[in-house]
Each structure stands twice: as C-alpha cells, then as structure tokens.
Image 1: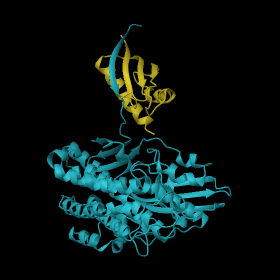
Image 2 (image 1 turned 45 degrees about the horizontal axis):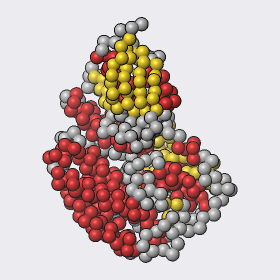
Image 3 (image 1 turned 90 degrees about the vertical axis):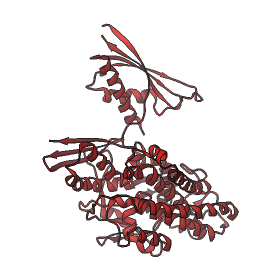
Image 4 (image 1 turned 90 degrees about the horizontal axis):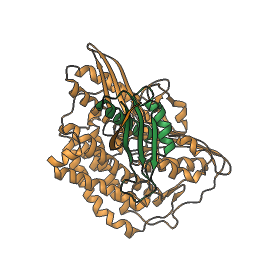
Length: 429
Length: 87
C-alpha cells in the first residue's frame, strides 16, 4: 500500500474530562447527564498497606487546589482512631492553614473562573485586559492565601509539614508576624470583592435544596463539628455511612453520593453559609447582609457572593489566629497507633470531605474510604440543570450552552481545574 | 491521572489530520515523549488501543520515541511528530 507521511509536530494537551449531555424534545427536557471521563485514580486502594502516617501526604496528592483539605481529613480521622485530641496553638495552626487554602481556592474560582461568566468575557485573560486592577487585586488576594500555606505547610502546593498529631515544625511568632499586615490588607480586599460581585446580574433560580455541612458549637466550620442539614439531619461524623451512600452510575467515572435512600444533597459554601450564618465573624455577617443575603441564599449563581463572604471570614479568622498565637513547646502530640477505625469530615473549599480508615495494631492502613465534595454535588448539579434548562429553552444554542456551563461552574467542581470547560452536547429537536 | 484525556486530544488531532488529507486510513503515528511527560510508552499503547478503535487510526502502528533529557524545554510534553496515511 502506498503511504505518505504528514509532518504534524503537535503537542498533546489535557482535554476536557467531563461533558454534559442534555436531551430536549420540544419544550421538555428528557435527559441530563453530567459525564465525568476522568478515570478512577484508585487512591483508596493504594492507601491499603501503607503506614497511617503516610495518609496526609498521599491523599494531599488528590488535589493540587485543596491538598490541605485532604491532609486535614486524613489527620483528624487518624486522631479519631487513636483517641488523640489536638488542642491550643496546634489546633489554631490547623485552622490557620485551612484559612490559607480557602482564600487561595475561593479567590481562584471567584476571579479566574466564575466572574468572567457574569461579565460576559470568555476567561480571566480577557478580564485582565478590560479590568486590570480588579484582576491584580484577585491575584494579590490569592497570594495572601498561598503565603499562609507556604509558611505553615512548607510549600504552597502539596505541602509537606502536616502530620498526624500536629506538624513537623511550627513557626515562631516572628515568622508569622509579617503575614498579619498582609492579611489585614487581604480582609479589606475580600470585602471589596463581596461588594464587587454582589452587583453582578443573577438569574432568578432558587431550587429547594437539601444542604449538608459541618456545624460546630462556636465556630464557622473547618475541622470539627456535627454533620447537619436544613432537613433535620444532625449526626456525628462516625454515623456518616449510616446516612450517606455512594452509587455508581453508568455515565460517570465519579461515584454519585446520596443521602439515604436516594436524596441528592448540596455541600460547599452555600450549604455552610445557610447552616452556619450565626457562626460567621461580625465583619463577614455585616458584608453578607449588605450584599442582600441576610435571610440566607438559595440561588447557586450567587454562590460567588457567598464564596467572597467566606473569603472575608477566612482572612478575618487568620488575623485573629495570628494575633493570639504562642508557639507551642512541641510541634506535635505523641501518637500511639492501635487497631481501630477512624472517621473525619472537614470542610474543603468545595464542601464536606469525608475520610474513613481501618488501621491494624501495627499502624498499617487496611481500608480507606474517601468521599470528595464534587461527587456529593454531582447529582444536585444534574438536578439544577433539569430545572434550569426548561426556563431558558427560548435562548439560542450558544446562550443556553453558556448558561449551562455557568450553572455547573456555580459548584466550583473539581473538573474545572483540568479545563475551563466541558463539552456540551445539546440534543434538541 | 490525565492519560485518558491526553489520548483523547491526541486522537482528535490524528483524525483531523486524516480528514484534511482525505485519508481513509492512518497507518502509523510517530509520537515523542519528553523525559518528564505524564505518560510512558506502555501507557500510550494501552490507551491508544481503545481510543482508536473504530476510527481511521485503528490498528495503526505506533512509533514512540522516549527522550531522556530532563532539562529539555519540552521535557514535559507529548508531541505528535508525524502521521503516516494510506494513499
């Protein structure tokens, strides 16, 4: 056979790892499927046989945007198994590093991914051309979060200083001091962010959600608390598996998590906000009220405001934690592994992150289960589209596609870090 | 973790080259893997088989060159060098 060689010299890039399939017949939506192609990564399987102490560093690799969430859920689950309580300045440092992660993750989504949707520009690069000062503010604000994670975690991405029982090294007061001024600036910038995004035009859309998040007796939740919902759920984290289950659906490689028997639910900033408004700091509450969210927020498009309010909260909390910090004598408390099961939920930027481990008497992990926020929100994302699309059927194909993208981006799904978006397949007759 | 999606992109390019050339069959594909790229040669082969099934490139021969220079500016890249088509 004759053949010819065509010179290509083309670089392969990571393609969209998700797609949305919508089937419309006349004025009826007949099917909605959020397909996630990203292959399973088998983290739960390769944790088996590893030391308990490796869990925070291995699971941190699950996400480059929220490694702290994985580290925090891992260490708290191990400490639950071994009966350890981490208190005082070590506990504060864990809240502080989580503040850093919330700031960097939320600001990334607000400025780089979500705001362009509302301003009618395709991405942050175009936004920077039209509003350079605003994008500058976003980048500086994000950097403040990165600096916290770098100082406490050893580096900004996949930090390596967190361990079961505390940290490998804790900072001195003078090392933390330079962050204080920066975070005070960041708090002001976050307040300006709330005021900026509150003016965006939001479609009217308020579904009847089941919100789930942690709730702590006195704090806006990070690492501790009971799991509660707006429908009366109030359980300890150890009861998680009695109330939630993961289902495999054919069209997605990510499992769908539901409240038993089969109720979709919503985790993340909107859920935390609606269930914990009274735990926000006064300045965050004040900004939320001024933004018109005093009575809660049911519109997922307004999650950009809630994310901004949570950024104010994180900056404000970080300032408080640094001001009262006294370096502990030891960077961690002693850990004595034993055969046990450990459970933890913490509040990742995108929502509740559940870890469960079974450890044997030598401290080896025998079983691991991890339920990330995006798999918990998947079903709710599909439900939103079932409701949202019929109200917008008169829109052009391109406009509808753009609105669907936006409806998904409301959840800051993990897949959005791999690609600005997924492929939309609108089957319309 | 991005093998499947890298392969999807690769396939898209191969199919578009075939289309531009009005080719009905792709016989061979030359790929260069940087020393720090996200895929090994066996990864590429494993993912190519299902990704190419039913396409113009089904059962095409893969020629994979694996580079060893970690300081090469393209060390992280996967490059499709050329596509051999049937005439």
